[in-house]
Image 1 (cartoon, rainbow, N blue to C red):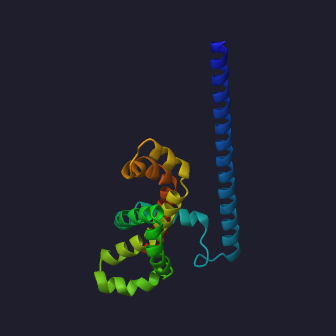
Image 2 (image 1 turned 90 degrees about the vertical axis):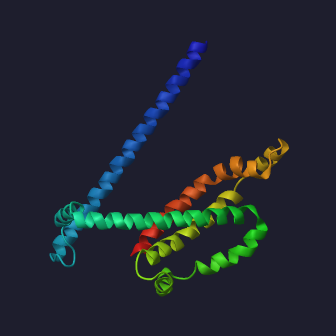
Image 3 (image 1 turned 60 degrees about the vertical axis):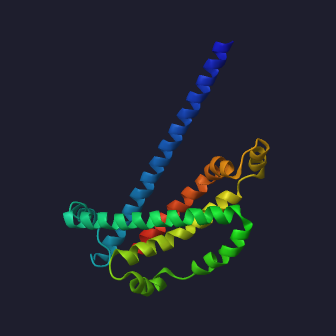
Length: 213
């Protein structure tokens, strides 16, 4: 009986894995089709205009891209830009996570700080450029500040959402077993809010890239 149950479980798991692989293969195939369709539309549009200055052909673009990724100067500049984005992203994490946990865990802190966050994040990023040059001078300082500034708000807001979406039952169960505030924060708040934090981090990186320009 036990062997039959084991074989049944093995068969079910294998069947599910096979279906998952087929589903992933199907999605990959669809993505390739969409990519080829876009390239085809691109090619037809370029043939219609027949002017490189308006829309270059996909082949010429691919050749130029290959030359770019094999150029030492361009690769060096890309690495410099990656370093700036990474520094700004780390600053946004270092400042955004504590604020998000604080505002999500304590309603009073949320009431005192949220209006400041909501007001400042409405200011367009380009409006800060003159001030950052005055504050940090010419160099990496203004760029890193703008990257961190644009990325801090998605991290704060998603961290707050992650903390507030935790069910009260987890807190009650932990307190009933004698867990203190630090233990609850370490074992419940942080693990449960990680998915939202990762979402905020992904948004922070994308906004950071846009701030580089």
